[in-house]
Each structure stands twice: as structure tokens, then as C-alpha cells.
Image 1 (cartoon, rainbow, N blue to C red):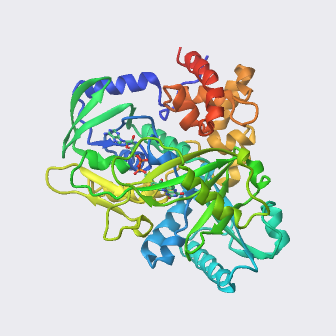
Image 2 (cartoon, rainbow, N blue to C red):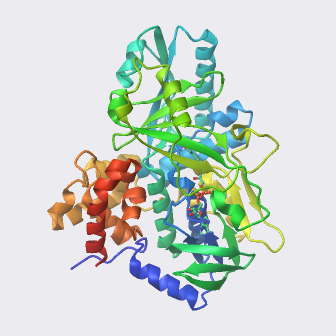
Image 3 (cartoon, rainbow, N blue to C red):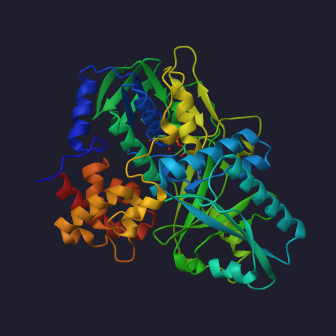
Length: 506
Ligand SMILES: Cc1cc2nc3c(=O)[nH]c(=O)nc-3n(C[C@H](O)[C@H](O)[C@H](O)COP(=O)(O)OP(=O)(O)OC[C@H]3O[C@@H](n4cnc5c(N)ncnc54)[C@H](O)[C@@H]3O)c2cc1C
């Protein structure tokens, strides 16, 4: 006998039933367009306040920018450096909530090493040290425990190389060790937010595009048919594409790219490495180790003109910029064979007075007037919950409860050790890892890896179809797992994903 599915399960049957409801004239209180961090967060907030909610995305969950981020829950240090104390505090508070209450299973503290050598001016070391002390003060003011995010400290040259063995020895005088929040994966967090919204009754509908959005009406494209849907209020959270649905929006999208490196490129570091960008006081490139053994090296910040594409790769100039900046602190240049992939994303920044997108505010903007939809743009993933609350506060007087609302699979950090499942699964599914172990117990072939050199298991793909709303092989390898970030791995995993999709859906 199979166990009944929990209300958070996004299944093909549930999708079909919700689509039929919409086509039959169901009028939700809130219709959200876009299921990235912002839209999924709004759906969750509204559903927890008792509103009837539908959220649609023209692609999969985390179809847009929300899967192309650096996967960090920032403490807001960068905003402090620009004098925006309010935004810095908000970031630090939301980071703490995410790590301690909302998603301890999908977040971890990531140590960052900033090496200093005798070729750098002494002021560089003093300035970065002062910055980390200020960042720690933000953490304390936000009420986040030092057990969650330990404070900064100075490392000896040996301490630097113990954590990142590829750092150059010559002239190394030591370095700062600082910690920030890291997501196990951005797309996984969006899926968890959307499924938690579903547990509170929200209809979560992927592959449904909005063609028009008005105050209380939208035209949706459902399987090729235009359906006029009425709602108490339509909310546009379509990120860098919001201006295609709401003419009031003025965006200045900024492109940010990462290279994907094999862990061997930096001799399998246990900490992230940050290196200053030459000629900038407050700009760094980061090499960020990931749970699957790869490293993401980022990040650029360049304004874009014209249409924002759905997917994009890294240009030779961007690759040279990132490698050049990080190699300044390494023993030897990175072996080109270790650069295995790359990805680009677009920050949905609100246009301002300045040309440089790095100077544009990361604060969000809500447009709420006239006959148009309620539209939210800007912000960042760290503050998605606060942004969602700002929107839903305009729709109901009922109080927001998401500050301490755990997402599906969440457990207090110390209790994650007690989950009866392998550590890899607990780190990606929290308490739900036991369900994946049950799948493997029933069919031991699901305990095999999808690809031998990566830790993702076949059971994860089955779980993604049965509970996480995956409907295509691309959903499985590009968003529920991140195998697809390396083109050769994507090609090799596709047949496995297709076979498991057929089997699980059938
Ligand atoms: C390179 C990079 C690195 C970043 N790193 C970080 C970081 O480490 N930490 C941090 O806090 N922030 C980071 N950010 C910012 C953060 O990623 C974004 O602010 C956030 O993901 C935006 O989420 P969103 O939901 O607003 O937009 P999106 O994720 O783009 O979601 C918009 C959704 O709308 C859908 N959509 C569009 N048009 C329609 C339509 N007509 N009908 C239906 N659906 C539609 C899209 O398919 C998409 O899924 C980074 C950004 C970039 C670009």
C-alpha cells in the first residue's frame, strides 16, 4: 500500500485539476504571474494568510533569474559599504530567518577566505577587516546566532592554504576568514517555497504564460488556448520580463555570469575564495564551492540593452575577466580543462539615474496604481520573504506569518542529524530525505547515481516527478538537480532522466 501524498505534493493530477478549475471560472483572490523567488514567495505569503491563490509561470519553477544566482543568502555588507544601512539590516535579518527557521535544511554557513599578499597595499587588509567586523555587527543586530554564522578572524598563510590549497604561497601574509549564508541550490529553494504554498492550498501551475495582465483580470495561455481569468488582484512578479506585461515598469537589467569549474581547479577547497577586482575598492570575484563538488566562479555586473534572453552562456571576454581576477591570488593559472561550463543571468534592477548597474539599488519597487496589475520588481533572493510581505500587506489586513514558517522538509539544524537517510539527501531534502530512502528501499536501482562522477541519485529524479512538479527531463536535470550546468554531463544524463520520467509519470 502506498502512503497518501502530502498536500505539498505537486503532481500531474493536481496540475490538471487546478487548470480545469481556472478554465471553469474559478476566481482566485490573488493570481501571481512568475514563479521565481518573488512570485513563489508572494504565493506562500498570501496562502498562509488564508487567501485563495494561483501562481503561474510560462516555464518551470525557477525558470528565470532565480536559478542563475550566486546561491548566497547575503548579510548585506555590500549595501552597508554604499551607506544603505536599512537594506543591509533587512538583508541580515532575512538571512538569519532563512538559515534558522525557514530553511535550515537548504542553507549552510559558507566560510570565505580573502588572502592578502605583500604586493597589496596594507590599507586593503585593514579595509576588508573593518568590513568583516561591520558585517559581524550586522549579524548581531539581526539576532542571528554565532553558531549559525561564526564571526570573522585572521588566518595565517598556512590557515589560508589549508582551506584553499590553490592560493599562491609567494608573498602571502595571511588572510581574513568570514562567513556568509549559502543555499544548497537556488532552484531547490524556489521549489520548496512553491510546495509550501501548495501545502496551504495554492494552485502552482507551470507552463502557463500570461499574455495580458490587468488589475483584476489576466489572459493566460493554457496549452495553446487563451483563457480569460478573473482574480481579486493580479500580481506581476515576472522579474527581468515584467515590462512585457506592465508598461509602467522601467528596468535596467544587469547581466551577471559565472563559470563552472571542476573542484580540482582549486584543489577541492573547503572554503570560498574572494579576490579583489583590480581598480575597485568594493568589488570582488568569488570562487564558491558547491555541495556537488563543482565550483562557481563569479561574478560580472554589466548593463544590458534590448530583450533579456531566457538562457545565455559566457562570452570569451567575461571568461577572461573572471579567470584573470581570481588567478592573481593563485599559485598557478587554472587549467582550461577544469573550466567545464558557465551560465549567465539577468538582475531585474529598477532603472535609475546612473548608468552603472553595480550602482543601482537592490531595493525592490512595488507599482500599485490605476488599472494596472500590482507589479513588483527589483530586490534580491535573500529578501524575497520581506518583498512578498510588502505585496500581500497591500491585499489583506490579516497579519503576515512567514517570518517563522518552515518550508517543506525543514527541521531545526541540530535535528537534521537525526534524519534516517544519507547525508547527501538530508542536505537537499531535510526530513523528506526519508521518503527518498523509502523509494530506494523499494527499488535499489534508484540508489544509483545518475552519473558516476556526480552525487545526484536516480531516486531524486523520481521524487521530483512524484512530488516536485517536474514534467520534463529538462526540469529534472536543469532545475531539480543542476547536472545540466555542464553541457557534457547534460547530454549524458538526458537519457537517464527521460527513462525515469516515463516510468514515474506512467
Ligand atoms: C548572476 C546573478 C547572481 C545573483 N546572486 C544573488 C545572490 O547570491 N543572492 C541574492 O540574494 N540575490 C542574488 N541575485 C539576485 C536574485 O537572483 C534575483 O533578484 C531573484 O532571483 C529574482 O527573482 P524573481 O522571482 O523576481 O525573478 P525570476 O526568477 O526571473 O522570476 C520571474 C519568472 O517570471 C516568469 N515569467 C516571465 N514572463 C512571464 C509571463 N508572461 N507569464 C508567466 N510567467 C512569466 C519567468 O519564467 C520567471 O520564472 C543574483 C542575480 C544574478 C543575475
